[in-house]
Amino acid sequence: MFHGSMVALVTPMRDDGSIDDESMQRLIESHIASGTSAIVAVGTTGESATLDEQEHCSLIRRTVEIAAGRIPIIAGTGSNSTREAIDLTRCALEAGADACLLVTPYYNKPTQEGLFLHHKAIAEAVPIPQILYNVPGRTVCDILPETIERLSFISNIVGIKEATGNIQRVRQILDCCDDRLDLYSGDDATSMEFMLNGGKGVISVTANVAPKAMQQMCEAAIRGDRQQAEEINNHLMPLHRDLFIESNPIPVKWALYEMGLIPKGIRLPLTVLSEQYHDTVRQALKTAGVL
Image (cartoon, rainbow, N blue to C red; front, side, top):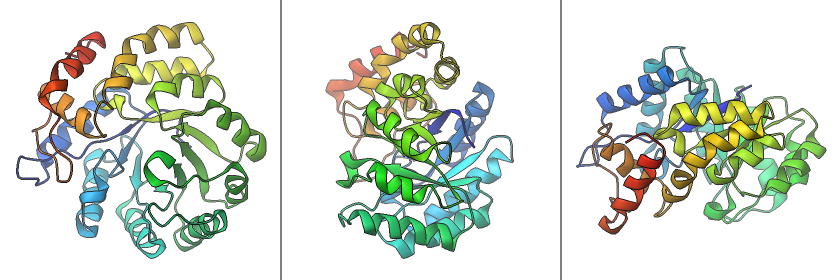
């Protein structure tokens, strides 16, 4: 359903942690102008873990309202509580989101059967296209290809964001799911190879600061043009690396602040990027040609 560069949008905040609507409008407009394929709102990069349910739903509604049908909106609605995930997913449907992104339940450490039943319950409860999100580095929970295969037969489960960085997983999932699911990278550093091996796009942190270049790289990789994809990606690689020099979204929020696009605000327990890394991130922005 969605192909190309999909930005994992930050949630702009003022110094007191309140949400900055004006900056959010500016970011969304810039992605529309830059050709970004879709906006993923209120995901990990959007600091969903520090938002209460009312704020979460409000941000989804506001993102849909600002976009006004000009760019698809994928709402992050995952939770380690199946009931809460259903509530958030229903909120996204009512707000007019185009799809939802559902992270595997973190902290609980469910079995593969528990993962299957969790996603099955959400898909059956809310008739909106849903994308699975596997990021075991954060959740300590890896949804395996055989479980993904079972879920791929549920009609409104349409894709998976794989953030393992394991390119072999692309072939494993494609082999077992045929064309029932679209595969999206959740790891900027390996996203080019992911797409050259059959992935349909990337849900990207780097796209926050270099949206046009990320979209161009994705287009080249998806059509199999390795030479052009590599040429673009070489300039982006310092961003792919250094935007994770501290926990995401700490570096990318500071980068956007340095670019004059958002205030410096971030919510505890996350903190503003350590001063020792400022020059590193600044140089990555310059190498990518965005500063």
